[in-house]
Structure formats: structure tokens, C-alpha cells
Length: 183
Image (tube, rainbow, N blue to C red; front, side, top):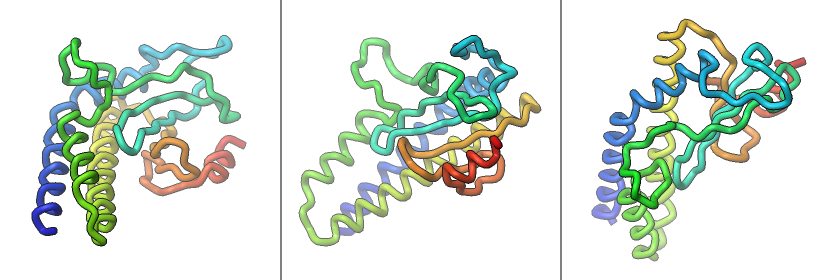
């Protein structure tokens, strides 16, 4: 059991190193978004119509998408996948943000262990993976905001959840609380 836990901890260390290696491209993408660059606006809207940024990620693959909303909370941009350029070869079929090798090892662990404590070990691994990922994203966001000197309401969350983290305060808010900000 300890070996399994150590193996999963090593995967999170590998993930942390990988995320550190792609911090610059993500930060550059966030700077471009804050400056209104590379955004396709919908329904005749413009950069000045955007009142908040939303970032969501997939739990398993860590893929990040972005979109902007107006003062009524209506989506005003096309979604954009981030980072725009991932550290991979163009001929690779793997499209997830999490490196395939890390994902595969975690998946193999899940397939190989049927012990009662398995769920607890996997939960601990996933909690740490999410914590590392969210902290990495927040750090990149803070760097981008500091470099541009642009303040923008922005929310970060796992895909399809009721709760989001305000990237400027790190407070957790629900959809209703966020909607009140647009009133």
C-alpha cells in the first residue's frame, strides 16, 4: 500500500514539474486575454463588453477552456483552449494537458489495485493533483495580471460545477453569488 501511495506522489511531483515548464506559455496566453488579443467576440460584442473571464478545467485531463461574459453574465466570446501551445510534438494524438505518461500510470494504478483502501489513496492523489493544478493556474493568473496591470473579474473551476474560485480573492463563490455581482 505504501508503495502505491509513493508511486502516486511521484506522479504529482512529475505533474508539478511539467506544469512549471508550461507556466510561461500559459502566462503569455493570459496576458493576451487580459489585453483582449486573440479573442473572437460573438454577436457584435467587443472587448469593452467583457465584464468577467471564466476558466474551467476537466478533472481527469486538466484541459482548460476560457470564455468571457458581459454585465448580464451572457457569454460574449468563443471558447479558447489554454495554453494555446502545449509542450508536445505536432504528430502526437494525445490532446490532454496532463502528460499521457502521467495519466496512463494513474489509470494503470486504478486498474491494478482492488484493495479496500484504494479509494482513500486515489482520493488523496486526486486532491493533491487538483491542489497543485489550481495553485499553478492561480500563480500564472497573478503574474499575468501584475504584468499587464489590468484588473478583471475572473473565475476558475472544474468543469460544470456550481462553485468557482474568484481568481482575485481566492474565495469560493457559487453561481448565484457571482450572478449578483452582475446585477
